[in-house]
Image 1 (spheres, rainbow, N blue to C red):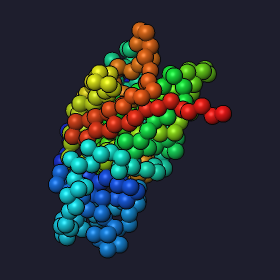
Image 2 (cartoon, rainbow, N blue to C red):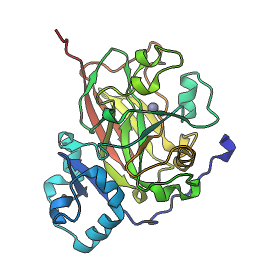
Image 3 (cartoon, helix red, strand yellow):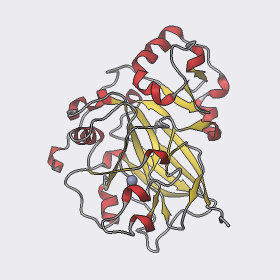
Length: 308
Ligand code: ZN
């Protein structure tokens, strides 16, 4: 697949009419809006379960039920309130079967790491035990841990050999992600060990909630990473080398995509290890990651305590 084959798909709003946000509050799935939240299992009297991972493949039914029943909201669980207290939120995709990640998917990032722009998507995995919530503490195993804010795509429908023009039908929604990376371990071997170096505990914070696919135009979303009042990354998904439909077409041509799988779609420029001098996450940082229309995460970072 060459760059010429990259297909730009206009977003097709309302294809599946799934306009809602689903948050994982203390392990229980909730529909959340600007004005409040609804515990899905309780409000549906058990028609739907509480497991946010399971609900990802039931979004069509959930949407129909929600529209018909219009359950009462708890105003303390609005997106506004939750955004101010992320401690209640766990990952909206807490247990994905497969976690794909894409390296060098923004030209400026490829340039800053002085690597050739790939001719086809560069795919690796983050092991699923690294998934954490949008307010989770990132424990730093070394002093060379780096940041990478990324758009995370959540698959809603199983498929192989999905054509780019049909990709949106397979997407449940999106959330913010951080592809945290321990650079010393990553570069310790030749070839580099991306997957293991990016899979320490809480190295894949995701959230703050799942925003369903029709709410945003995924081809043009600003994404930022900040710490201590400083902007570390400020990019836009329009600068992806391989856009989301192209990534889905490419990956599904090799691996079956299944509901609840996630794709970390690559980071824009501004990472720390290629700076002069190199910079890394410091003990005590609050790492803030935001994507336009999807919300923000704020992850405290602390050094591992000495084990005596
Ligand atoms: Zn990355």
